[in-house]
Image 1 (cartoon, one colour):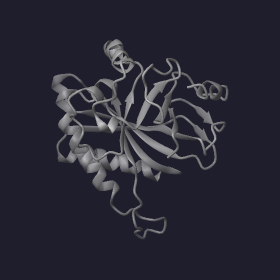
Image 2 (cartoon, rainbow, N blue to C red):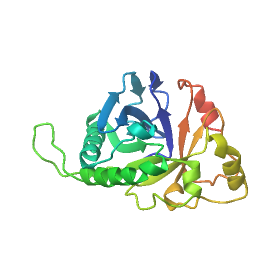
Image 3 (cartoon, rainbow, N blue to C red):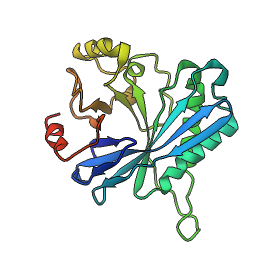
Length: 235
């Protein structure tokens, strides 16, 4: 996996100018909406063009109804349905890794844990080849996004079977000043899973105190274009 990764959200994106040897692409493959016992997937509808041979990461965004009367149950059937939908994104062309984007509230954390454990299990199973026979399963990296505040907190996800948690140090809302001061003071994330990467927005740039040598995920509120390469080279 390259150390520079472009997040491509739900809009038309032409990333052919971003060379595959330098940039991977983490694209929104689907959004899954959870409400009570219902699991409703919405697949990506916007075109995505990438450089030949680009390393692709299929991102699944999970949305829940925060109304207490409609919170998802996260029972066994729901967990298995979500995991199956996420695993299905591996069938998209050239996908080599999976990422989950879920801003879980405290009451949803145990359900999130169950999901990640089930995902690691199903990602370890052999998959059918094109002719229907079973093939040995290559290792599929499983990653997650993380609110920056999670990485300084109570380590509630330190047992998740993920390869990395990407701290999103942008659009931090009420936590923004606190997190920026935390990093400027030379502190590193308390959660070890957060110490391999950063997620930043091209609109906001890096924050003072971020450690060198870590994988960088780049977000942008508008479509990417070739001129953005100049900005990325200064990040």
